[in-house]
Length: 287
Picture (cartoon, rainbow, N blue to C red):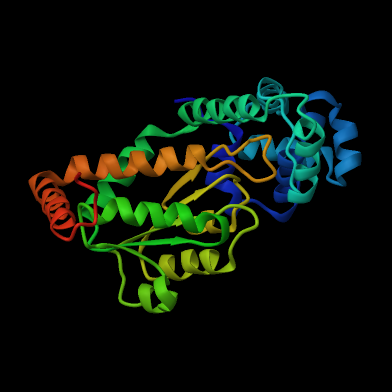
């Protein structure tokens, strides 16, 4: 699979100098300028030297800065960071019924899934599924908007194992969940801007204890990536005021499916037992 600017940056962001990080952050936030304006202008607008941009390209293993620019031109787009600004944009575009929000949002979600297919490192995905399937315990952490995704992941996992648990559930201590974990265990962290402080600290603490850290985010600047062994940057573009989680849900469902496929008869038997218990307890409709 061809590597992209975001995947290269995710792998190396923690090792970059402050100047190269500043250059990378500017490119991420201003892809249109990167794709269409001369390097001298980009340098002046960003306050970062032209030489730093060239060093960044080499650090990310592009042959030249122009090769990096061509990738931006191929995937030209503009990021909108502020939720309030995005809400205003949504209202201007769709509030008066001029265009179909349903159609625009559907198109964005389809584009995100297509981009996820192109971006995802399949070898990393397979290695992650292998490691999760063999882990003694898997802790799941998501804060703010990512809480629902990790709750859903915990629900899916509960069918095949008791060893995947939601961090901090029902007031439980997040630190208490990590203490006692080691290199036999794993943690999956889903976090997107604005980043939940607990999620970043959980990644740091878990990594310090040798825990296998999986981070799912939508930007290579996510602070938790520097602690991760497995990194997934998921596209979230949408006409919505909020980032789309459709591709993220696809990724976590895929991971669970791959893990169950590796756990054999024991997982199949437990899933059958859970279904039987649900019927016995009348938790599911059987009319």
